[in-house]
Length: 327
Image (cartoon, rainbow, N blue to C red; front, top):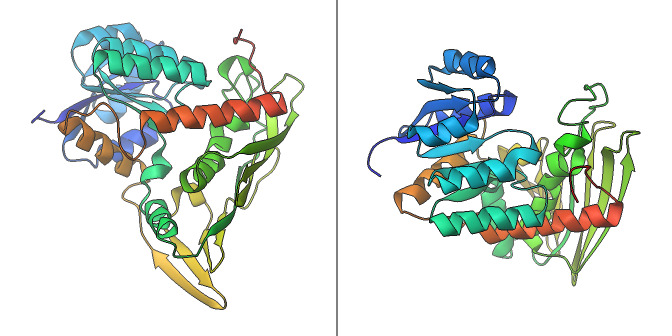
């Protein structure tokens, strides 16, 4: 693959527009196609970003031969089906998190990637954030001694959103856990791995949407306290504490542009600015993998997505989070 990598966008909403703003910063990338169930929305997107090919159905894009990769930015409940259909056309997939609503869906996506020998990655963009990458390296090197405690939250007020919005409509896999709770869970998994026990409790909207979830991930020698919510704001900070020091990722920690390293009364401030708004770094990883004919990334692998989906499933089971479309 020597020429520019041709991207198609599935679901031209707010997240897709943010993603494309960074995609345009990547020298060997071009946005060649956009698809939506609404041809009008697809055309508006194409007019804004100069996209040549516009489709009123996803299958039309898959059959068109106009893309090498697709970025899936639809509501969660469409992720699995669209991923599998793209992979079956030998089109690479970068799928917004969560990759699937549950582990069964993620297994199907991974299976389609392997069967078609085609690239698949969950868009866990924080994994490629320079500050988070460096903090992980330093934790692994013992820079703060033995890691003992993580405290991470992600919350904003969303009760003013429409009942049919993706955040509050159970038929669209609504709720905090899959949308923003995935970030604190990701951080605990990234630094401590799979917990030995999970405790979780949730509060719910009258329509069944989960609105608040508190979690404790228990490890043999450490604990993580995690939270997500739509009922109020939170500090959006992450504290990573060891026996000899701690890292602090300041608000908004999942898109950090640096960190603090604290030892006793000594505080070292480290700046690591992102390029663009942060998606740029995961796009570079995708391109690197495609140039090497890989079907998954070493930094965020198929197994990482399977593990993350297992953690989400366990939290859902513990706290009673269900969706009407699941059987």
